[in-house]
Amino acid sequence: MSEQSINHDPPEWHRRYLAEREKARAAGEDSFISLEVFEADLRKELGSMSADIYMNLGVAPIPPEPESCLGIAIQTIGKMPIHALRHPVEGDTNGWYIWCGGYSEEEDFFQPLCFEHLIDHIPQVQKYLSLPPGYRFLIDDSGNVDIWFDESLLKV
Image (cartoon, rainbow, N blue to C red):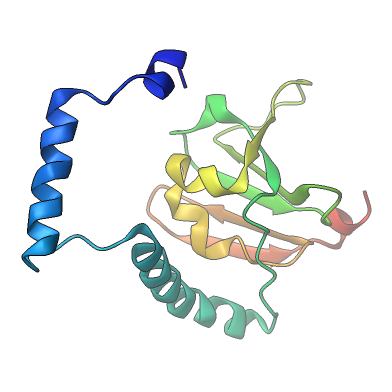
């Protein structure tokens, strides 16, 4: 964030917007919900969608910590298919490596990304990210998903 955006007053349009929201809240007419309520509703919805996946596989979900990091090939986002694999959790990493399209052996193919920001880049993967270490999945451009266990991922 730039120093200016931190140390200066918000622009006039933003102050007007906040004032209008405050009036609507006071009158009981504000239809917006808090970020906490939105996140709770989203987690509940995704949890029910995801529960079937884990039940069908016979595995207990192991969700990544929100502050954990994963490896992502940012430069491949938008290509298909989406590949993901999970190694064991180590340190502040959650074990996930995600890329789209073709794989590369280049040293800088993967970059670190905080887990909480992943959905901004590839929302399609969210309901699969509680798969335990050792699992892989692939999502094709039609939305078909293959999920399988790969024991070799546990030996790193």
